[in-house]
Image (cartoon, rainbow over all chains, first blue to last red; front, side):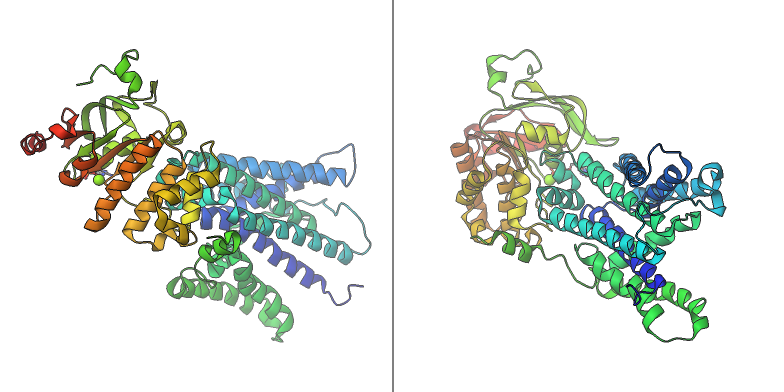
Amino acid sequence: MLDWLDAFLISGLFGVVQIIGLGLLVHLQMGLTRVANFGVAGFWGLGLYVFGILYGKVDWPFGDPWQFLVCAIAATAASALAGLFVAWLISDLDVDGALVGTLGFATVIFLLATAWSDLTGGAAGLGGLGFPYDAGPAKTNEFIWFVLTTAIVAGILAYVLWVHRSPYGRLLIAVGTNEPLARSLGKSSTRAKLTLFTITSGMMGLLGVMQAVMFRFIIPANVTINITLAALAGLILGGITRAWGAVVGVLFTVALFDIVIQFYVPLPQEWYTQAIPVAREAIFGLALVLVLLFRPKGMLGEMKRPQLMRRIHDFK
Amino acid sequence: MPETAAETPTPTTAEAVLTISNLCSGYGSVQVLHDLSFEVRNEIFTILGANGAGKTTLLRTLAHLLPVTSGSIGFRGTDVTHAAAHETARLGVGYVPQEAAVFPDLTILENLQVGAMIGDRAFDECLEEVFQTFPDLRSKTHLRAGNLSGGESRMVACGRALMQDPKVLLLDEPTAGLSPLYVEQFFETIESIHRTRNVAVLLTEQNATKALGIADRVMVLSLGEGSTPVDAAEMTKERLKEAYKL
Ligand SMILES: Nc1ncnc2c1ncn2[C@@H]1O[C@H](COP(=O)(O)OP(=O)(O)O)[C@@H](O)[C@H]1O
Ligand SMILES: [Mg+2]
């Protein structure tokens, strides 16, 4: 029934949806609240590995789907707690401090994944994972998993859109633009940032869980800074302050390269292994520079809250 | 001079909204405020001082955005010296800074909404009161605050502080940079806020003449040191000159 779908296309689309999800979450952190996060791979990777270890290495007295649910919840909680902890560490630091702190966290996760090989399988990787259901051939299972992940990312988008019009979102914007003034509004800005990081990091961890199941195999190379850069490049291109920025930006970067060019542009086969990956990084970088030079607010332009507010409130 | 504020509530301290005793504050190792003591009652209390006298530093300290180095701050009989900024705001301190007083990315309405995150009164009721005080804002609620003129931003900032339903308003040079016509109007508005809402007002000014017109009491701040507060009516030119030199 899924003949039109190539297995590689499913995994390409899955990657795009993952990066959109991460970009949306980073938008809440960096676009609204202006807390730099260069450690996306760490929060995502922690969920990935905690899930992989719990699911693959622990003898559970019950099977799927309970085994999956318990492990997924634990992995999400682990990432959420890590988010809370890192946010607490960087809560009083400036942008540079936050950048170093989050990047440091991601580095620690990568090093642990590599070095703690008893638990993580080290560079050889960690297997023993599978889908919590069996609907037939692998491609069908993967397709179902892709749809589930897309539903989760759609949920994240809905959450982002809700935050944009909620009192909590206004508080985050206030904290992001003028934290001292925001503190005189009667809400703890530190608490707002800790809550934000707990929720968004937990969601990043959940996306990591989805990744672990999709590929059934985890290696430290999964959790490098590349994933952070892809999310950031997409978000900045689309517009860091816009709710839809990550969606648009990732479609024009990751999706363009990993799907359109890979599958629909007839290029010599040998290009795919050498030239295209290099060109991909070079063009991402060039696009970023061009956007920052000529459209610093991203392809969608400035956050247009007045129109939004007029639509929502529509009263005089 | 009310230097005995730290003791148990006497009739005078009971009516004081803010009690500042031997307050020292500044930025890191740079001390700006030296041993300030005064109290603000339910009145318009004006602090006059030249550029760099420490007016902004004082209001930031009272809004708890700068830590107190030594001394104490009392708010309606409670010691709040080491309270966090958001706690003081909840108690009823509304702060309108001199610069960057609005959230530029938020609309006017959203600026007023973030003011209303605390306080028990109904949002619509507070909003209506703010619109009555600043009628110009009513038709502009959806505009981005970052695009407003100086006078409009000042109204939004003031309105936002009023949405918090404060017991005392700290206004840092509320008319600086406004055209003369606006200045007069703004002072009248401040006076009417004080009278109709029963809010104590602590405001700072560089120019004595206009501010003295609405003030109940005046203190002169010079190089971080304060004069003895006097009734505005008694603040003659000679006394002003003397105080400015301090
Ligand atoms: N962020 C700061 N760091 C160090 N010193 C400051 C800072 N802000 C103000 N000052 C110093 O504190 C003194 C008082 O400044 P300020 O309170 O802004 O005065 P005013 O508001 O009366 O013009 C000045 O000497 C000024 O240079
Ligand atoms: Mg000042």
